[in-house]
Image (cartoon, rainbow, N blue to C red; front, side, top):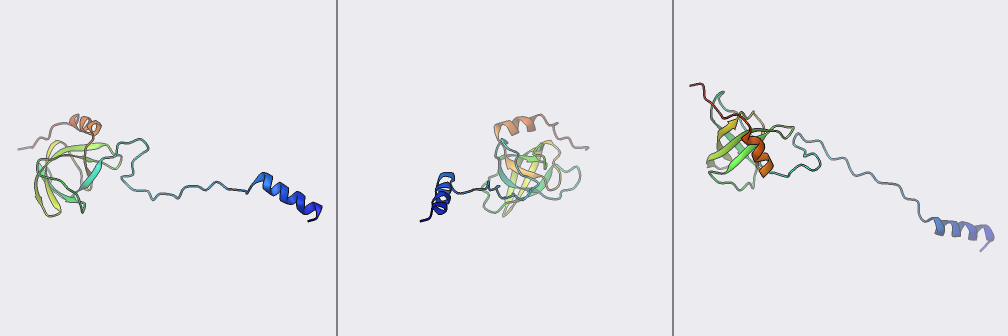
Amino acid sequence: MSWPRSVCLLLVLLTGCATSKVEPAAVAESPFTLPAGAPRNVRVGFIEAAPPGSRHFPCSLIPGTQVREGYLLVSRDRDLHPTGALVITQIRGRIALLQILRGAPHLKDEVVLPSTELTREADKLPAFRTDS
């Protein structure tokens, strides 16, 4: 082996292979992406249309969701702030009928099984009142 080749081989062995830092693949933005450190609440479904001022409204359940009547749930907006404290009054297939206890949930709000912190935040919402 010639002298220049030996030097080049020695330099390659001493410096190692060049590596480049691989950036993690970009995650598609979701309206319900959790910020770092946020509690992970189990998503149950999404609020569907309901008559204005109604205390009851339907929630489309995510396939595979295991909930029962009487479960306490919390609805939250895209910024993960609670919009309502809810209770399941009836389940029919993949639709749950929810009753508002506190707050005022909006169409397409996410419905989750709440953590202790989220329950405390939802308890601060004003009690639901009917106009009648």
